[in-house]
Every structure is written in C-alpha cells, then in structure tokens.
Image (cartoon, rainbow, N blue to C red; front, side):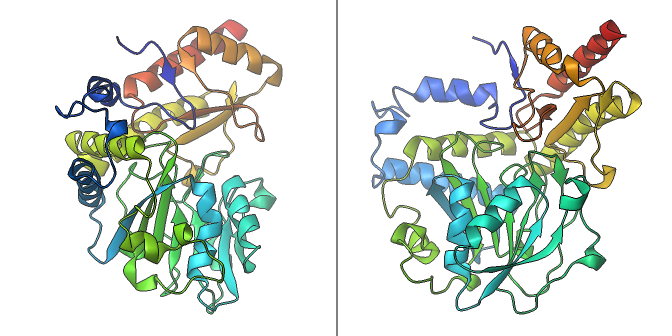
Length: 361
C-alpha cells in the first residue's frame, strides 16, 4: 500500500516508505528467526548483530573518529538537557549557552538546577530571527562546556557554521539537523539527537561523545545517566528500546544507499531553496528569518492575512499536505523538510501555496 499523504510534521516525522515496508515484512519474523524484532533478547547474538551494524553504519555515514563513543540511549533530547551538566561540570561552576530559541532556552532552564549559566549570546531581542554576530559573543574561558542548538525547529533558525570555542568542549543538540548534512565530528565534545526527525521513531537518543571528556559525574547522578557507565555497558545498562534501535539501523542503511549525508544535504538544499524562493517572491507569504540563518529543515512562514490561516491548513490537508500548522508558541505554518520528504512533495506544497494565493486575490 502506497503512502497517501505528505507529512510535513516537525516530529515524529515521516519515514521513507522503503523502511516501513521492510520493517513490516520483518515484523513477525526477523531474518528467519521466527521471532519479531521486538521479541529478540538484548543480550543475544541476534540483537548484537543489529546493534553493531547500526553503530558501524552511523560511524560510516558521519565519519566518526575512533576516539568517540556512540551511545544509543532511551528517552528524548530533553532528558539530555539535565544529563549533560551532570556529566560535564566535573568541578566547574558554570557553563556557556548560546540562546537562539525555545529549545536552547529549555536546555538552559534545566541546566540551572546544577550550575550557573553564562549566556554567550541571545537572539531574543530579534524575536529569534537571527544569530548574534560572533564578535559580540561573551565566552567564558573557565566554562565547563559551550552548548548550542544547531537548528531551532520552532522558529526555523539554523547555524551555518560550527562555533569556534577553542579547547572548551562544544556540545550541540542536533536533534533536527543530524544526518541532513556532513558534520566534522572532531569539532565537538558531544553531539546528541533525539530520533524522531531524521533518524527514526521517537523514544531513542543518539549521543556521540569524545572519550577524552568523560569524567566524574555530579553527586547522586543515576547510573543510567552516567555516560561512562553507558559506554562501558554498550548502551545496555538496562533493556534498551529494541525496536527503535533496529529502525534507526534501517534508516542509516537507507541514507548510505542514497548517497550519504552529502547527497542528503544537496537534496535538502534544493527543497528548502524551492520553498524559500517561492515565499520571497510572494507578498502573500512571509518569512522573517535572517536569510543567512534560515533552517533547511524547518521552513516557518505566515500569511499576510492571519485570518486565512485556518482555511489554508484545512485546504492543505484536503490536498494531502499534512501537519503544516506552526508550533503552538509560534503560530503560523511550518513545513519540515527532513530527509524522508521527497523533493516532489515540496513541489506539491509550492503548487498548492501558489493556487491558494491565486484564489484569495
């Protein structure tokens, strides 16, 4: 059965049809074992095959150096907002944060339970439409780490370079941008990403961490939140989300088969450029994000007549274009163009937007 809708949701996002069909075919009987993949014991050789294959595929895709651990952890990215300071403070009394949107703000809020926060820069005064010039950043040379959100899904703001923070561990939430473009992993202390954008089903977080920054956690840190213990236990201190691990492995294979992250980036740039160019050429649709920092993953826009928003969304759904409603805190519309969104899907969206504009004029 072929897909009947295009899911522009920010997450959980759409998955490639090939992956879902493969998972469906293997659901009752994984590779002739007679068991569903969800029934395979996490200590068995069968699951060891799944886990090791997924990790190696990710290492291949992102060219992850050998001196980095790759952890497959249960839970979402929000959990890491607290776990990161638990692991990285290591006697330091403050951490640096780049404030560029809702998700960096949530990370800062949770980190304040464990440490003082130094706000290196803030996009709040611009209503999160741009990123403060690097020459105005206030980095603390004695900080435990520097944290930033690579792509803010709510406001559609994305970094176009890797922040230069010297020898201080750089930590990035790449939940909505990982696997959409090449990454120089060696620039980072930690990269983490919840799965439900470009990786797979919700319920798992991938964490890539330089072995050299592992150290003593703060007092009373639970074992499951200790990166050293998770690395020693190969992400299996307790029963991991078996099915999710299997699914992300399928997604990594799909990306490799389709040319890797370089090919994903080219496709994503074509998709976002098509949509942004249409919006810019129209007086009916509005995007206020600084063009230097527009997200390639989450294109936010509004109508110059807000009263037409609900009608736009209703008609979009009737045209198979789903989940275009903006975040509840931002309003308007948001089209998420993750790897699984075909270029033809964005063309269909632009065609609909053009026709909707025509009928309102």
